[in-house]
Length: 353
Image 1 (cartoon, rainbow, N blue to C red):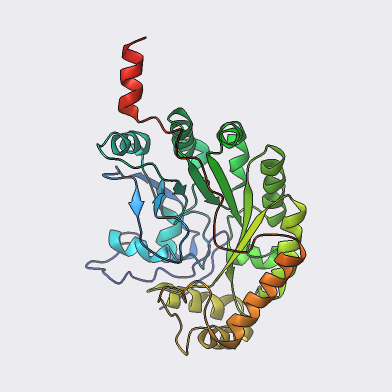
Image 2: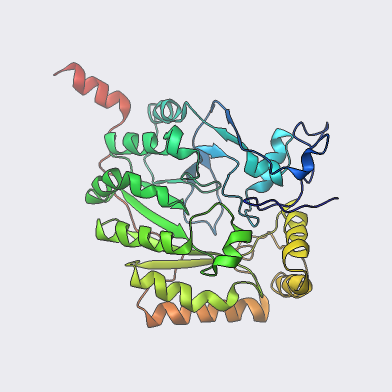
């Protein structure tokens, strides 16, 4: 497949999805392959906004993704293969064809109103970033946070987006009631590597300032060092954790690069385009940590790998966390579920005012 790097884009091709039944609408024609692909936003009504999982190596069992696809363009993103379900490319389409859920708040309230709903913390941003560029205009994530605060429901956030500072008012109020925790993802402090690895993500320094702002506002914040990529950013483990600790985090975790489905070819194309001299070594170490395969998707292995190389990474990470008095376990702060007021109860209370 022909590959071409575009400024501000991570993937270097429109690799067809594994379920493709027709030619992808956004394939380039008439020389358009020489032009940087533009971002297209599309509304997608959510039938059910809360996703559930039973993964033993994920520290939450329910999540919300306000967006499908992500303009940040992180070439390593394990959510890329989800675009195949839309008959779109997990490559360039994933970062240019962005779907947003305008009814996210209404759908969330509807789920909370169901009889027997059990309040447990919900994570926003488990797959795609809730603070990607479209959020500045659409404010779907902010609307969700307002709803979590209104009904006193606990929520966790995972993001790379410095736009989160806009919502410090809501996050601080949620934190005052022990209803929120935040994880900020930083895989590299190398500006040149970041530019090609996660092209539309704010610089590492902007994310460190976000950590400082969150911590200063009393909001529990942690570091997610992810993904660790062999022979590319693995040398930065100690520096990233140390700098994050200086910014007030209380917890840190790490995840090894994962290559499910089409992501293997997308990432391999990226390696061969941007760092061809390291490509074979990167994949060799990754296979060493995956039992000879490019990716081992089994629970307990997919996040951290196995074997001598993976054990060495984990040992280094745990050592620097111990030195800095950080909690390196995958657990999260226990948020308060006792304050939740279901929408139906709230309406009944208002009726007696």
